[in-house]
Length: 173
Image 1 (spheres, one colour):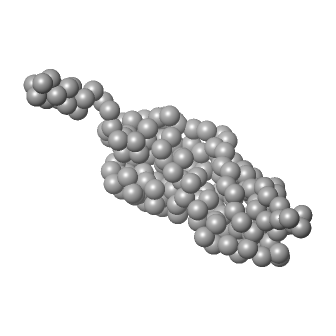
Image 2 (cartoon, one colour):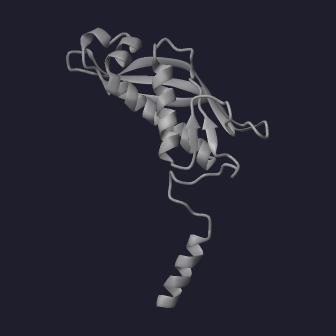
Image 3 (cartoon, one colour):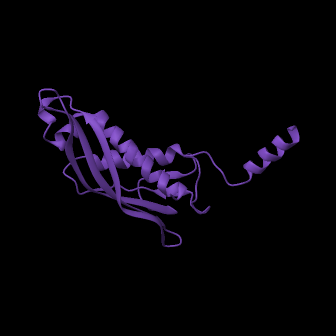
C-alpha cells in the first residue's frame, strides 16, 4: 500500500499539474514584462491608473517576472484599453430607491512577445461585472462619482479585472 501511494505521488508530481493561480504557459525566455498605462475610453476618470496598478501588482504577486512601466528592454509587453464602463441598479430598498449597483464593462488586452514579435494572447473584450452597495444618494446615478467616491469599490473592481487578465495570460485559459 505504501509503495502504491509513493508511485502515485511521484506520478502526479511529473504530470504537469500545478496549483491554480501559480502555473505559467509563457515561453521561458520571458523574464521582463512591460505594462504601460492602460488607455481609458470610459467616462470614469483615473480608472486606467487603478486597473494598470492592479495588473502590475498581480503580475508581481506571481513572483516569476520583473515588471516595468513600459516596453523598453522588456521581453514582452501587456497593453490594455478600458473600452467602457456602465452601471445599472441591481437592488432596491423597500422604498423603491436604488441600494445596490452593478458596474459592467470591458477591457481590450494584448500580450505580445517582443523578441519574437508575436501576440501570445489577446482578448478585445475582457468583461467585468461587480456589484456594490450605494453608500450615498449623490452617487446613485453617476458611475464616475460612485467609483471615484468609493475608492475601495474601485480597487476591488480593479483587482478582480487584474486577476482575470493575468490568470488568462499565464495559464492560457
